[in-house]
Image 1 (cartoon, one colour):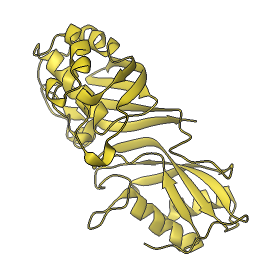
Image 2 (cartoon, rainbow, N blue to C red):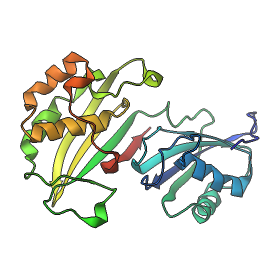
Image 3 (cartoon, helix red, strand yellow):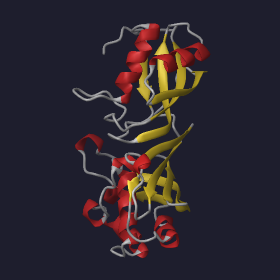
Image 4 (cartoon, rainbow, N blue to C red):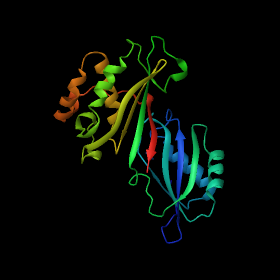
Length: 256
């Protein structure tokens, strides 16, 4: 969709926070011949304020990935108050997307470049029997009772500033600095759910899903927890585990 917004001194910058079920979307960013969250969001926005807008998202997110918190920067000259915009968007958006926050922001606010940290979670349903209600929202892992202590030992090596090339799917569109700082990484159990939480100043393409796949290899005794530093040091994708499915991944928190 084309928009007519032209940046001048009269524009406003509005920070909009949404949550969404990514099951039926090909990620956030608009693509040709694929339905995305951005396309649906902008269609709803156009019904309210017309083409007077420019929209930026805080992250690309992959096909099938969910978000508990996703931040959008909206530049517009339209005068609609934030609370009215929030209510109007929620009337026009499908049930899979909800606006949970809307506020005025500084004119130079950028949801991606101003982000200090992002937190992702990965949900695993660790039970012999699958749960139909979590199909598409968690990875069903039916094997052994996952050893949380062993997984947390592996997670401890993710923390710190490293070159995470080994945990990135090669993609020429994302070549560049492969160094990231991981502030938090750990696994906890909640009933049959095993949840991996990781927070960093940024993430590479498929980084969290590869980290999760590597943890599952640790659970299967195919990788020793103490091998994680070696895998990081090799800077080679083939040394890490497989890429876990997108269904269990959630962008959980964005910090500015």
